Length: 127
Image (cartoon, rainbow, N blue to C red; front, top):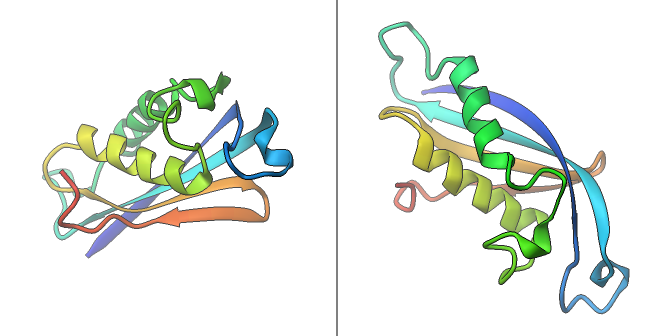
């Protein structure tokens, strides 16, 4: 099995509805997302996925989130924009854009330098 990863940063604000604490107020984070891809074999060029293409996909996925109030951006207008839900959302959106071969193995979303949520898709759930 081969693995590659790429990181991207974006800034966003949000509220966490129903938490009964300070996080219910509008506040922001400088997020860091790290996405891991896995593949059982390499493409014709000897790669899981070209890093330039990987970067393009990550930018496309995070562009609607960057400098936005996540609580107003679908699907987070209906679901709390927790780091856990962000990780799952990023995994699904990256998976939809991948060529045949690689699959999303793991997504880490860091809200701060010390707080991270991790999502690993069930291979049966990945499109």
